[in-house]
Image 1 (cartoon, helix red, strand yellow):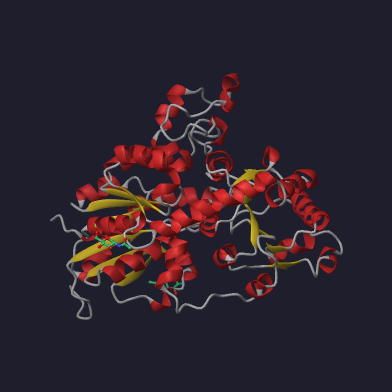
Image 2 (tube, rainbow, N blue to C red; image 1 turned 90 degrees about the horizontal axis):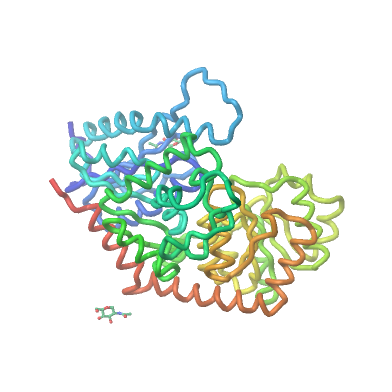
Length: 459
Ligand SMILES: *[C@@H]1O[C@H](CO)[C@@H](O)[C@H](O)[C@H]1NC(C)=O
Ligand SMILES: CC(=O)N[C@H]1CO[C@H](CO)[C@@H](O)[C@@H]1O
């Protein structure tokens, strides 16, 4: 039965979010843009209640409906403690969870789903959409390099050795157009090394095989960042749409939104010199171990670099004794920082980061060089692109902080000629990023194509 308070809808889009990390938040941001561009389309957004609660869905337009779905954790389940466990339980249960939730939403509104817009992880949406006679549009939450690593997983496995035989890890992926500078050892775990049979590795492998069947694949990036790889992926996928950087779009379209800055980071950075500040932030899922936090603190102190350090409250006790007092004039340590705004500030000199995709793109959007400390997944790949493809930063030696290693990186990026080159490369990318999201820019045109794919009714 159709409710009476529905907007008149000509199509019904089901959005299937991956309820971990930053995936659902970005998908919701894109959904908002689609919903405002197509007010007569109904968007049903599905995620777990835990994920929904962190998205603040209070001010949603009337054509977006949020639905809670189960988290896939069996009753009475005892966790073994592996960090991938909640993700894997959800992935295994996801097809049935979403099938039920979609059926219930369809009967609520009296309108069949015409498009499935899902996180790319949900490879099963390909068959599900076909059964429902709906189209499938997939959102890839990383960049082009990691997407390629998964699309070409079979080719990579067939071409290079698997599981670190023969010291082949230093070899490159030169046989994939656009990945010439990426080494085998930079690839995400589960492509050629690590556990190839885990639920997560299997999901990514199946995803790579399914995506060429998707009606469109979109991501938060811009074409000019990787021209060769863009052309390559356009030949593999039906519609390959770079629609970012979203960080630049949100600031232009929502000028009325107040920036949250509870700890006064923006007031603080205003008083600093041009390109002098180090911003240290590792996102929500990663924190370096205590020994590395110590190395960061010592490096900052010895090099006297002004800093904003975003550090979870519970980790602050691991800072060296007296560090906060001694550096009171030099920098601030805060439990949360307005990252996007900080990275846009002209005083920002270097972003010390885990090199997660959104962070990398935010740094590029601000024209800020990076020091990368990769943890897992696509971080090594992104760090490699930062260092060797775009030449806008460095990855720490052996991928971890030591006092000496961090000091050398700070010197290189902030002081030496090398760093000036990185800064100028980063500024060029920032210009291209701004162009991509301006009138007639590639990302603006791609967003129109995405809208077209999502709201066109095939049946
Ligand atoms: C965008 O494209 C249209 C149509 O080709 C053109 O008239 C307009 O001047 C362009 N705008 C910019 C900013 O290039
Ligand atoms: C439908 C909806 O908006 N769902 C929920 C998202 O999560 C919070 C917290 O669990 C709920 O209060 C919302 O109702």
